[in-house]
Every structure is written in structure tokens, then in C-alpha cells.
Amino acid sequence: MAYRNGSYIAFHAGGSTDPTASDIKYYRMLKAWHEHDDIDFQFINSHDKVAGVRDTSKKETLRRSLVERLNNSKNMVLIIGPTTRLDTDWVPFEIAYAVDQCKIPIIATYTGYEWITQPQELRPLWPPALASRIDNGTLRAIHIPFKQGAIDDAIKQFSHENLPATALNYYTVEAHRSFGIDIR
Image (cartoon, rainbow, N blue to C red; front, side, top):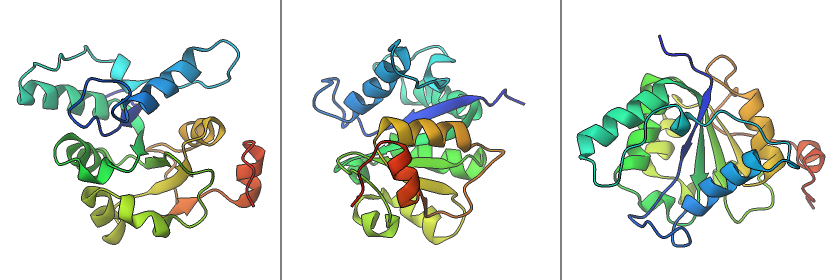
């Protein structure tokens, strides 16, 4: 059995290696928060625990690497932006494997939102693999804004051993405020 202490980060790269043209910029932001000495944001990045695979690797080699990373993860941080739902290859695979095989919770973090208190209203942004698992009740998730305090808390709190109660969990107004998020 794998030692499951990492956080797996999933995002829609859009087939681009340009860091400004896809959601990879948000992944890099998570890494920057983690590496910054003056920011209290700690997580074990599952992507750092397995040897990297180059973009030119064969699809099956990449798939094996992703499976190994997911098997070593306690949760998945799914970065959801305006184009995430359009991904037809890796994001759907990652969601399906994380939920169906690894039984890990999804920390659905939405770019461009200050707070999340009604996650069902964000359904138009959901990739079909996420929506179907919410609908069939196999997913446990928390829906949060892409904000450092909320992500940090969710990573520390939720794991394969401590799942959110439902597929549509979210933080209270008071919790948002405790993360420094001004919610109206």
C-alpha cells in the first residue's frame, strides 16, 4: 500500500506549455506560496514524489506516472477555471481515478471567485467527470475559492481518512472571514 500523504494537483493545461495561457499558472502559484519563507502554506506535492515525465512521453507512460502520483495522495486539489470543463483527456482521467480507485476527496478550488457558498451554482464550470460523480454520490468534495487560506485549510483538513460529508461541502461565511476573505 502506498504512503498517502501528498496532495495531487489537477488543472487544465489546454495543451499549452505557455505558463500564462493555461491554468498551470495557478499550480505554480501554489508552489510559490509553499516555497515562500513568509507565507505559511505547507503541503506535500504528489507531483514531486514521482519522477517527472516529459511532455513527449507516450500517453501510457504518462498515465502510469499519474496513477502512481494519485496512489500516493491523500487528496486532490482540482483547480477549476473557465476552460477546465473542456478538458477531454487528463483532467477527466485524474478525477475518475482519484474518486473511483483512490477514494480521495476533491478540493475543488475555483479561480476568479472571492468566496463560494453555493457550489451547485458553479455546475456550468464542472468537468463532466466531476458532475457525474457529484450526481451519483460517489464523490466527497469541498468547494472553495482559489485563495491561499482556504486551500491551506482544506489540504490540512481533508484526506482519504477524513472525507467531507457530501459532494457539495463549502466553508461557512465565518470560515471565509477567518481566511481573510471579505464576504458580503
